[in-house]
Length: 418
Image (cartoon, rainbow, N blue to C red; front, top):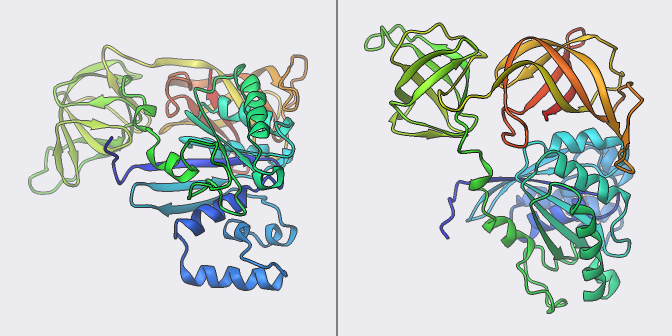
């Protein structure tokens, strides 16, 4: 199978405190030779000061001073690295319960969630929580890394027991593609290089799995959605009458000649040309940034959406959304917030909290309508003007929203349209 060398894979790490997430990422970067010499030197010095024998791999991601001093990860740390086969962005998210919101933001754009499990402890509450969030965010692929195999004598039985435990949890959730890898991040077993200590494991090491994972089909190619960001009127020679609608294709495929509808106005037209800075295209797909010109002169502005006439999203002012509350201050009852959906900004009100989810037991709480930091709940929203939405399960771009508090300009919640 040919891989696109420029294909970018985003993955997030999740696990309980001290499961070795930061060490695993450090090992990935170290063994794949993705670290600059000056970075390596600085971390070797810090490791010596702390009295470690070798290099403390966790220091590659724990960027905040508090994290280094406490030896824990607090914020989402993004790391970029590349191998000859693929480019990667890693979101290292915290393991603590009180940082659930950080995991939600770090995982919202990921193709792959890597969930770490300590081989000595097996599947714990935090593992269930992370699997639930991965399923809630519809992350297409999950890699379960059973770490610290060196502390259980590289036992195949321990590994198989944990696989069975996790499968009984994930079978109740919407997790499509789950793979299991026994690793020791500290010693490098099955991270970049195959482990000699676990000949019973016939699968690929973690990096090879990430490099060869098929992610092209994760993008929705059926529903053509083009949220308009801005209108291009160059007013210069050769372009006097040019009117292009610029933005990024959210999903689907567009071609010149396609019958399209502009929403919410409902006017129909045909695509005349698809332009980029490098010339015209015969086809555009997500996530390309393009400019579309139409056969007809239609009044279109930022926030409108160009879609195929035979395949339209729902235009509605009433949304049901799974919401994660991100702000320190609780939600104000019936307060108005700015809702951002693709390029569209409107005012919205939380009409009703349908239920909250107990993040520990994953049970529903029906009679509590308070919204506090890290709460995950299903709510009903009402917007001032229609939004063109798909369900998040079908389209992660047109199915996601954020809420902003107008008085502080802070993002207070992130949501997924049910």
